[in-house]
Image (cartoon, rainbow over all chains, first blue to last red; front, side, top):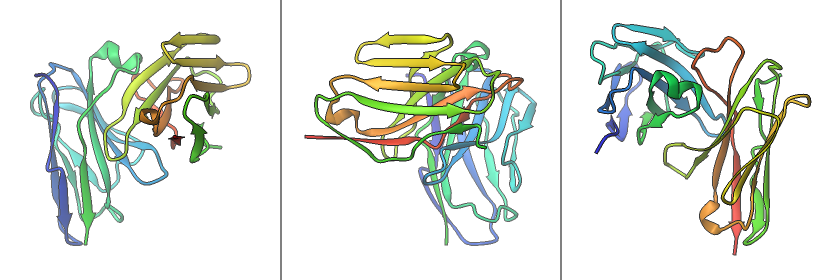
Length: 115
Length: 112
């Protein structure tokens, strides 16, 4: 079955540690996105990539980093510079056309808690 | 002013009633609007898209768009307990390319 797989589903981190969230898709989608969701805040765009080896900052990129070395993979690193990293992180992908029609396919999410 | 504004709710409606969810936006040039449904702890899923003024119906769902007044609404007829979820309004900003901007969502509770 085609889809997006995010791992881990739950992650606990100590302050000052970097963590990497995995996002893999087998939908052959060119575009991939990372969103952050906090209670009562909706989804906010962290980074997005429209093609391999290229990515752009979203609205809240500070304290995060990404890479896009393969079409299927778009990992997100939450660095120690991110002041309030506890949140629900969602990865999504789309075709180039699908992005314009709102057809984003989301993974199940990763819930990060900083202790 | 936020780019997309929604009342966070919760909006409570009895089973079988019509639920009305509203969204206002600030970018007058936005052309593409979407409604996503998100169950608690789950990822969002697209349920409706609308691009032109007026109504668009899909089963029990009707999306309404009024660009002059800069609002989008979602009506859910014959509401069911399974409709209880958070509904996110999203749009593409002028010059936003293929990036969606989301509202904060409205929590809907359908009561038996």
